[in-house]
Length: 260
Ligand SMILES: [Zn+2]
Ligand SMILES: [Zn+2]
Image 1 (cartoon, helix red, strand yellow):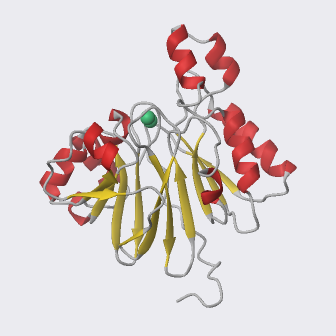
Image 2: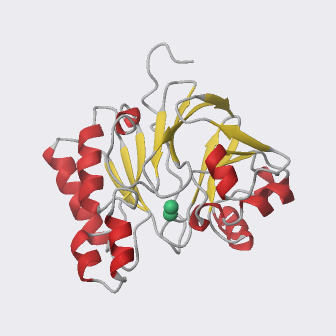
């Protein structure tokens, strides 16, 4: 639905329902964006939050109340977002997969300066896998290898290191963004994607680009160079802050034998 430093949200649709991953816009804006991609807000079935920062959970409470939605989040995120008292708050645990709307969801603890931030791997009944690495400070094991064998990887490519270094952010903020609990640079994202790029990877979606410290062309160049280097033919898709992205299908052809 849009991604960047001032708001992030993504819809995952399965045969069994629609999951909103993060709700980082104001509620009206979020509703508008949902409708723009053909989803009535009342057709959502659940919300999953990666962490409590405003650009990921701004509308979570109001949306959950207005549409009576369950909100899945780690204990730290529920606490940080002030959502513990919410009627349908459901605590999820990093490393413990659970089922939701026909998807096996595995929350993966990521390094970022929030209480208990997670990325997530979603696997459908045919074994098709989508991974989301939103805000993430660095490529760290054991988290990183949880994102192996995906068809679609959504990954933060926050900043170009040189633009961040010479840009207008105050020094302390620059240090935070580039630090181990901050955000992934284009370079880090490229290295990370290269290490995850296997035969199955069909789509790499670049998420959370900074408007101040990055340019789509730089992010694209860094990632595509690396994909070429490792011989991966995945399609590169860039998300935008001010516009929704067209629906992507998690590889319809690649249903593995034995899948249902
Ligand atoms: Zn964050
Ligand atoms: Zn963020």
